[in-house]
Length: 394
Image 1 (cartoon, rainbow, N blue to C red):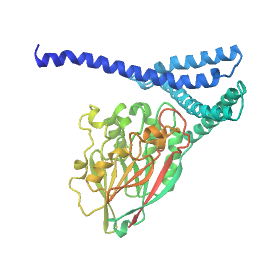
Image 2 (image 1 turned 180 degrees about the horizontal axis):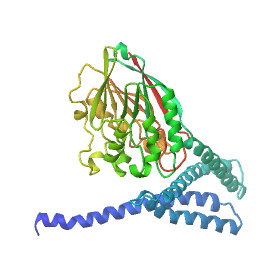
Image 3 (image 1 turned 30 degrees about the horizontal axis):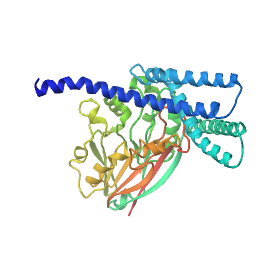
Image 4 (image 1 turned 135 degrees about the vertical axis):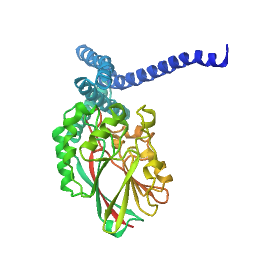
């Protein structure tokens, strides 16, 4: 057998091994997510009547079994919005229950040390976990569905000219128009943006979960956004599940500059500012022709003396910004974690969770917590935002 034949023969085995590893990992995660609340609330010394244990077990088992097919139907090729709504809500509920069940078992240790015996000890834990989860889910739903508050940030740039001092940049990101119809919410966001009298409005991606044809009505209010100098947009990773090039073209029809690895220059008085944008870092592997993050292309032809404002969806793209001498990068993607304590997992992939940070001698990064939400319609300890960034001379 030749080397080439040996490699080709090994490839199917590797694919099977990867598939098996993926299936085992997902199964383990699912069993933990649903199993920890099940054990904590129903079994761990509670001594509930058999009817409660049986009913609760059937309910949790039904949720566990139906969750994968609902998620696949909702977020797979068919994009069944009703299935996505059910699966996303279920995911949010079980994540909150899982997180607080873990903390509840710490309470169990405290009660044990205090001399509280079972079944009272375990029942107190169960009641506490359910009560906290209900409060957080209700509050988190209200936070997710509301029009975001305005977060105001001043950013000083060394190379900013005096005529641009006080330039008002409104940042929105991660609107995630999706299975829940939020056309009224979108109109409310536009109303808030226009009330801020911006010079520049930037959308740093993840505009929608779904194709333009399915989310057109929710995105329509973006056409009413007003800015005195520019409205600019770049793709996020979710566009590459939902027809990225069609979203680029649609945003252009709404009057936005799609900064697909390119830049524009805005002027006020005698001073100018370069506003550049790059595709999301996942674009290169998406298979969409011509899409990949390219800082060099985005900044080709710019005057090196001018300050540069860069739009890039993910904070992790900050390395390219530093290498190309960008003054300020605007990003989203993290959602601030969205549902505590998920932010600990986000930080394993991203250098920053939210807010203003310094990277290298020149480059600053502002990471928004996001304007909308993805998936579960909850925001817990991670409020959404519409960001008003005022540029100042250093």
